[in-house]
Length: 87
Image (cartoon, rainbow, N blue to C red; front, side, top):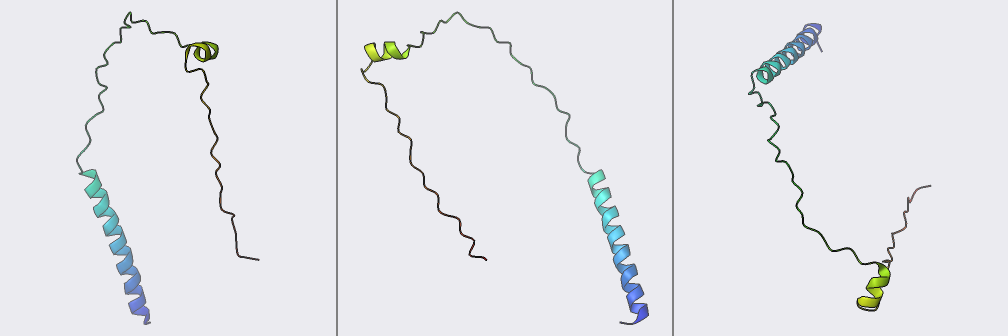
């Protein structure tokens, strides 16, 4: 490659890079700004006088409920073996 062509190519790449950076900076600087974040008006919570039924204990559930406790089974999950096929 000729020395003059190499110098011109370096100069061209530098000028285009600086120009693109300046254009991008100006484009972002003149972009529409977001509105300021305003906190919404929060409604105050007033607890009502509603009284919930107490949760039955296990013994109460067994005597008054269905007679049997629910049976939970843990699922058996098998994962494939990891093989590297390498040395």
